[in-house]
Each structure stands twice: as C-alpha cells, then as structure tokens.
Image (cartoon, rainbow, N blue to C red; front, side, top):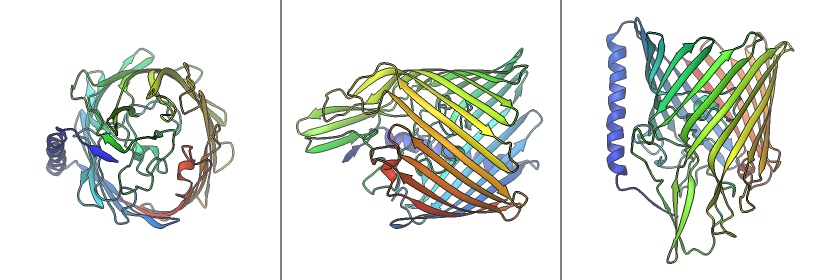
Length: 448
C-alpha cells in the first residue's frame, strides 16, 4: 500500500521540532536558575516475550521538573525511550495524525524523545488556570471511555498499558471557577492531534487488522492510502467544551459535560481513479453531551456515565456497498461497581454499552455493542506484593483480553513486576485480532 504525504508536512515538522526544542530549553533554564526547582523521575526497563520471541526490550527515562512560585507552578515532563527489539514500531515511526507541535522526535530507528507535559498553572483571582501541554481527564469510568475524550490515545501497545501512559497530552488551556455549589471547568484545545495506530510496511506487533476498523478491499490493482487531511485554522478548528460538577449533601459526585470536537477516530473516504483505489482519511466534528454520577455506598462505590454524540461515522462493508460509511448519533453508557469490603482486596466490575440510533445494515458493527471488565486485586505482606487479574471482553463477539500481573515493592524506589497478556476469541474482533500476540512481560521501575 502506497502512502502519500501532504506537501506542507515537511515545513510543519520543521516548525514543530523548533518549538519542541524551545520548550525543552525553556524547561531546563527555568529549573536550573531557580533553587526551589524540584527534579524527580522514573527509569523503567521492560522486556516482553511473545510467540515469535522478544518483541519489546525498552528502557525509558521520564524526568520531571517542578518550580513552585508564590502564585503559580511550572511543570514539565519528558520521556526518552530506547527499544532495542524494535518490533512495536519497526524502523522510524510516522505520526500522520499528530500535530507538528506534539509529534515525538525520532532519534534513531529504536530511540525517541517526547515532551509529555509542559504547563503553567495557578490562580488568577478566583480562576484556576492551566496553560500548556497537559492531560484533561473527565468522567468516572476505568478504561472504558464515554466522557474522557479530550485527549486522544496511543495504541502502540494496544491497551496493555495504563490509561495515563496511553493518553496523549495536548497543548490546551483549562480554566476552573467556583459558581456557588458548582465548579465550572472550561477547556480550549487548539492542538489537532488524534488517535495513534501503529501501521506501516514493517508489520508493527499491534497493527490493527480487524474488519471492524480496516475496510475490505476488492477489485483494485493498486491501493493508495493518502495522509490524513489536516486543518490549520487555530481557532476555527479548535476543540472546546466545559464540565460542571458538584457534590450533593447525600454524597453524590455529579458532572455535566459538553464538548465540541473532532472525533479521534479517522473516517475513511474512497475514490476509484482508473485501476487505483484512493483512500483519504480525515476527521469529523461531533457534539458530545454527557452526564456522570458516583457515590460511596458503604463498602461499594457506584460509578456511572452516559454520553450522547452527534455525527458519528461508522465503517461499512466495502465489498458489498458503495457507501463509505453511515452517519448517526450515538448513545454510550457505562456502569461500574467497586467493592472494598474485604481486607487487602479490591474488586471492580463495569459494563459498557454503545447504541447507534439510526442503524443501517451495511454497517460492520452491530447496532448495540456491549463490553464488560472485571478486575481482582489483592495485596500481601504489608502491601509489598500486589496480585492483579483483569478480564475485558466483548459480549457481542465473545473475544477478549485476560491480564495477570504480580508486582513487588522491593524498596521505596524500586518495583519489580511480572505479567502476562492473553488474547482470545474471533479474529475479526477488537481483541481477537491479536490472539497470536500473547506475551509475558518483566519490568523494573526505579523512582528518583
């Protein structure tokens, strides 16, 4: 498959590199010249072994710098990663869905550098402002996203790592102010970066192959996948929204969300030119209106979210229809229960549902899709050992992911861990597409 690039991409990348270098230097200068600066960080060494051998052997250093002034705080965090196995993103990776200012920097075929976070926050009168590259987290669910859609996700390791690590920080602005019993947060996101899915001719370990996401292509001598259409209008193409939240007298944590944004999943459009099939990805606008509620009821925590989205595009079966996709509004919801009534044991269960309001038989997925998650976690020996078992499954297709991990807090700064990830189910499913990618992982984390 041939990939074409936008003509302005090289210039944009050059400007992006300059801005990232300026941000790095500014962070180092600020933290060097102020004695109050606090330097922390983490080093991780991780190896993963799959059916074909070692597919991950990476070393990650994540330093962070904090300077606290009288009325403000400056924080920056960086990540240097070297993966000598070079199987997750073979060769020099490409990020066509990232803005020039948020791309990772290729240092070599196996090394990269990234500005993870870079922001200033503090009070301006009664308003709490946070400006810069950051994560903005909304909602109450654990891993299953309904309202937590401000930041896109990196699927380099599919969903095998924590959400904080998969979430892609964006250059954005957030302002919070109290309105009586309510708290109002407004956000503005000019950074047009979207979900990252590993792809390319070198067969990344977790490249998507499921027909739910990759169209069925027939009767084409040549397929040309063009670079995603980019939008450069900093104000007209920005995302923006707000969240209202409050705590009621009987313990409910209530939130109301509105977000006008480009959805992070690309929409594929096709065009036949002679014997070639041209595929053009682009991103479409949507309105999200949502509600969340949670409460502590004895030993049980109840969590819930519901969201209504407009203008959602659904992939069709290209082998039987000329319609590239169908558009509909969608209702998504999640209900979760956490239980802590047993000493040193934490149990959680969630069920997620997504419903297409105007369904068409050409759409690949079902009208209503269900998933559930269950997690068991227990600590031993004064909480120095942690055993965790998690299962995520599609109820419709009965494919899923089973994760088992054992973690040991060797000292206050050293954590050792061992885990395995097992995929199962139909190969056309979200999880089943990776059923030959089972792996065992070992890691050492050192905090400083």
